Image 1 (cartoon, rainbow, N blue to C red):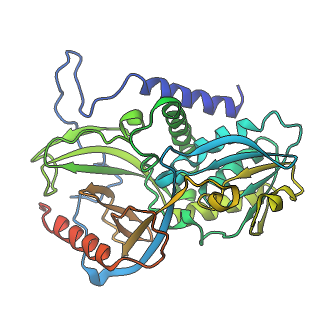
Image 2 (cartoon, rainbow, N blue to C red):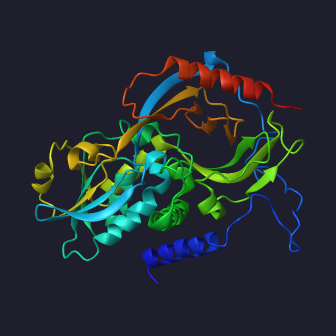
Image 3 (spheres, one colour):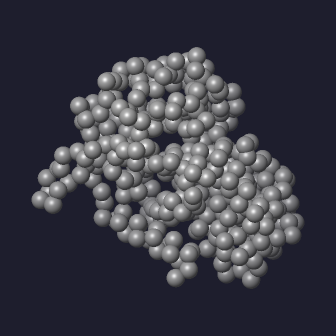
Length: 382
């Protein structure tokens, strides 16, 4: 069995497991709910005595960044098309899950071109989706040139939080044929990320807490793929130190975009790929490329370049505090979220549909900073 077949088999096995469903709390063999297991974050990777509260003092703010999620209400696109005489494979529109789903949809996109007689391809876009597509093509013997208007650190992927979470992908829960595609892309990507050397690529497993005043249900993005979140269970008052009574607690990966994208670009070049800065204003310009197969990973750029009017920007802004070494968990509460990374503590909580502006929203900044300050001030310590 070759590596690609093995990876896809592992993804299929995960999908098979997903079909059985997964409750939000551990259940014993006789059908009764088991007592909560110890915090899966407690161990050698957690500073003694944690979890510790974030110091959310606004004076620790070191930067604010704005980005735009390439969102399609019906979900992302992976399909084959033609541009002039070339095979054109679309792979874009991942919403808030570009990094999360990048390897899974790249696998699907590359599979659509496997029947081509050529093994020379152009990849349009140098964010997480484009780079994953380029690397999978190279692994399968293709010569690749990546064309992009912007390179890291100036891509949409660079201003992502990096939490592995297939969220903000479509309006409502995935349904019909798209639900199957969503589950497959999630399972494949989950497995591909684990194949990467974690330290080199800036990948860390973190404990996540998703809070509610009542025992929270799995959100619509989690329910179809709940088995991809190890240790998933409900914890209640007295079982955690946070100021909201209940939480779903689980493990998920955090991918550090500055580290990850740099290493991905290095791997493309080491494997003989070229990266060329170039903008495209029309499909005719794409058709003029020398490569006979083209992969469109342009994100929001596909709206103007290929006429996808369903694409819309979803504006998000992140407020980054000084790094805090002791913080090794993720919180999601009341539309706010906190993600710890080596380059800072990320505080977010905006989803402004149709807003393509680049200026930070002062009111959103106040809501995010004040909300996190109140939340962490209410943590039980000691």
